[in-house]
Length: 387
Image 1 (cartoon, rainbow, N blue to C red):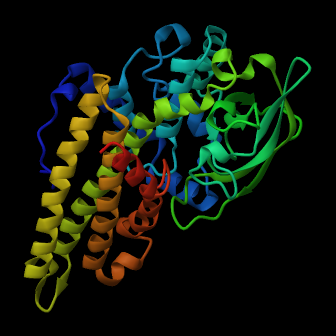
Image 2 (image 1 turned 135 degrees about the horizontal axis):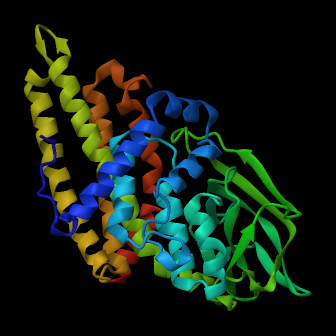
């Protein structure tokens, strides 16, 4: 029985969803065994071929409409891909970024031509995606970006630098957040669609050395007069980029909360098993009242968090999840994630500091969740403004 025993929500009680989950789980078992994932950690990135395998197996673009090469599912199917990835310890594969953050920009905001041109190739794995938002020295203040995409003949030339870009070394399709009008803040931002193959002036910087997420490629990107055609503006109209970004943030922050919740559950399961097996002073670590009280409190708080996350998912499926509520989920569950993983590591003793134990990697990997998708300080500002 799982440590967090919350009833299956009604929105997941569907035989077709169960069948899909079984198929995705079997894919991960076959194509992402521990030995292969260990190699990704050593290399600092997931090999390109795995994306092709995932596309062929139907793990990419599960909710993309069938007319654009997708599988015609919904957000529940995307949840399955992410959930099964966590259950099978498949580190580094940025399916949530590709499927639930980047592809929805095209589905919801792209022109008909853009959808037909890119979505089938993103679903098949022919194209791997990234979104280039963050810049050196800018952080969460997207309105202050300095990267530009200025008109030049029958297109635009992109100039600037981006950093902390997930999939930066692998991606061959990048949504670049740029100013088409440098004199404006929000109204001057557009999202530019760039295929990297043959793009003169585009350069990948170094793969960044992080304290966690070893298998996840995170990189710098540089743009020096990179030309894109006039139809490269997402949606076909300049100045809509900031509003397109804001429209997708509730789902992005919900995804981060869901990922944090998965880590919380796994940390508790690993720690209960460890403490019941490891002995000290003639009895198991679990037999000490301190261990039981610590894990009991964490279970109680984690159970409440899961109920709230399921509520947010249900709201999102109905199109009712608002920005402040998504921010609350991201804030609360990622803060709890940090506390749970830290206390679970403590209960592992010295073993918790050794990377061979999953809790050590969870400890390092969890730290970023309070920063990306908008730092938790930004979450507090958004929530306060709604009061």
